[in-house]
Length: 318
Image (cartoon, rainbow, N blue to C red; front, side, top):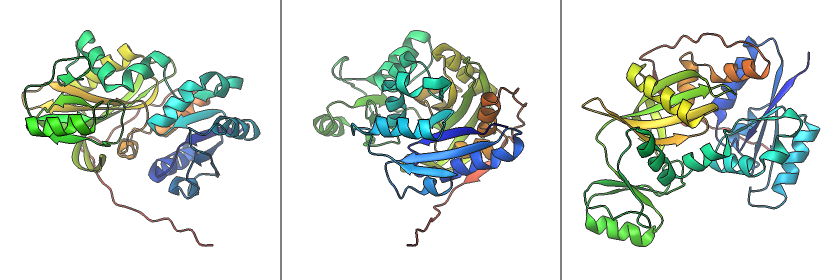
């Protein structure tokens, strides 16, 4: 039986996620091999894949040719990006990298253009009638006149250069330091990350909301599964409208009055997606099943499951 090969692009620190893909192999009749690549030769996730390679930065002109060489020599069947930059790289070189029926786990270009620009995403939400915090971009809208606000990079990820704006002085400082930031109304409520897997046709096959109980550096450290039907229905509607495919992570705030506000959308695994996997939402297995042409098994989610995380060490002895 032919072995199907999956490449993780920019795998870096996603050790627990790659391990989840390793664990899911045991449930498949079809054999799979995992290849991890990263620009950092010491990236910890490279140590838990079946094979690994280092690549130059995406900005390096030689990166594409080296990745194509890996894909040809290793007979790669699918590429799963782990960062927004990896998604953008695949999108830019979609034609070259998808040759030979290779599956790229990214949606259509138009979806990426919306979701990788927080200003475009907010305008989409407004147009389509989804609740989202009032958002300001100084180049295209009047300056905000109410506080508090959250300042974010327009195309950032992982909470980089994000800050709380409590008054006009804070706003003036942030505008001077980060002139291209967007500003979102701060919504008080319970913060959620929702893990989604949609098949190649854009049909959502799994939606699991997780309440984010503690966060450090933009990454969830403690979360609790909460299969809130209203959130699930909203995420399904948004997924279908955006034609999402593959693994995605949607973030939002559940206001105390019951309204759910969408705040961000990642076209990839979230940092806490391993919680959903461990609670029965086995997205790696679903990816394997789709690649092997098999029917999806009905997942059984352990509602109210709690995950706590801690740092783990990987040693390199020479």
